[in-house]
Length: 425
Image (cartoon, rainbow, N blue to C red; front, side):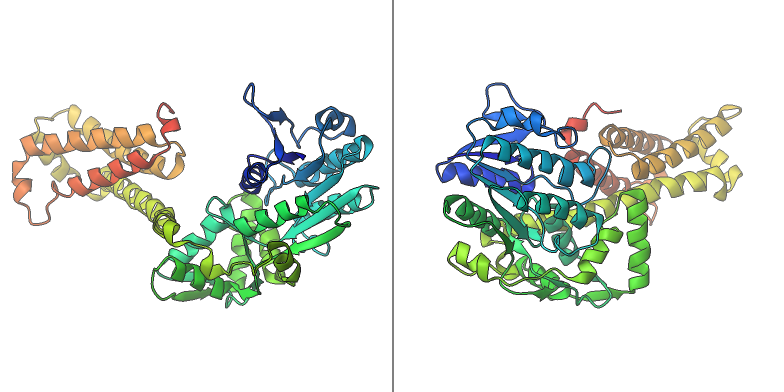
């Protein structure tokens, strides 16, 4: 069977395309940009909003699976186009050209939810259901997988020494593992005689958010979970800020979806799998436990390390610019043969430089050159102190030796920085 998969570079689409190929199907991947000579075609859900654009791409296609979706709208990636208009154009083209089966990856709760995300999904679902062709609307719950954004967020939370909870954490979820989801969709593709239906794909049973995080922590072997309930008023403020800025782990829509709950009967999922879907405690396999645990801990340890380094530079700059007695600073500079008109230039110049380095650590997204600059300046400061003020080697607070762990920390951040930003300014 020839299967066109949209969103083939995404978290679900990429896994699904590989699974379909392993099952013997010929898969055509729809991507915004394609490599020459590959079995891929170009398409952009933010722009391709008319059926006539899709018809040439569907020649010889037996089935179409739409996996395009974003959990939060931003820039050109808007719900109305990505979830509604482009899918409707694609489905209409499928109907016009005679595609045998269309599978729409929707979301559990889309048929009754009131968020912008749910509404945009529901409009596409209803349009597909109105067409005279064979369709299946798949409604997965929260999907867990190593590459998934939600999985990274939940493992990060589960790895914290104290796990924050919205309220008391009783919100009900029913996550399904990405492998179970993909296996179910492949089974749907294979069933040529199935009637049109909506299928909820979920884990074995509902579970509270608190118990899910505890199960993930246990799977990472991080010991007993300790929780910190956060007032819902505070969570709502954070969510509102997330909606305004487009950043943060939660916005008003996602908070509303979480509060409402996201569960369904797992019977249909079991029928497609021919076995019980795996529970949260089995989401992290033994062979991937170490990597998941390390990735989860680094997700919050690295920002903490960056913040501490920024604090060192900022506080050093503030102290140099006025908190430390000026005459004492000039005495130290004189030991390095910096006197007269040069003394205030070096004193305030170094203070401003330190302050700017600290602020850049907080504000810059591409920090690779910044880390190199900070290491060079630290080495320069250390060399000057070693020559002009060697007695600091014997200081009980170890002001020179403390530069060594600071250098090591900055080098760690430099090593882990995305190498594609090597030449970024």
